Length: 167
Image (cartoon, rainbow, N blue to C red; front, side, top):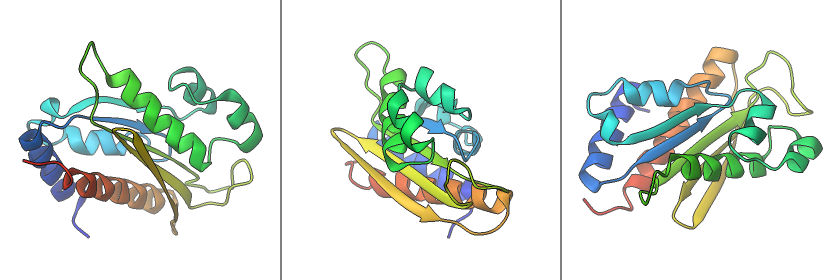
């Protein structure tokens, strides 16, 4: 797979050409997606918003994730990822300008399981238009490896979605 920087350059270039904007809600990746994108010149035309909602309560209060869902399943759940992606798109919309792509990550980087979820379990949601897809992954390694892999896969999903838009 490409390096994070190469992925981010491709995303910024393609999103600018296509007039696409992105908002990111991160938990397991801890801001790594937004930081990687921001490292590319011209990212300000693409990245509307980046939120690190690391604490479960912030997912509810800031991103609008259903509290009952969080109470029942914890923060590492596909529906949580979906609601995070939808929530960040909503927050990133200013006036009439909607955010084109919302992406969200939630999972367990370790070293210990969380809310009954094993280390490495990660959900990445991508929201575009009326569609939101959630992908499940089981990454291996230590905290840093898991976070890196989750970031790399999330960026790859954005690259894939961008191909749907005409330049």
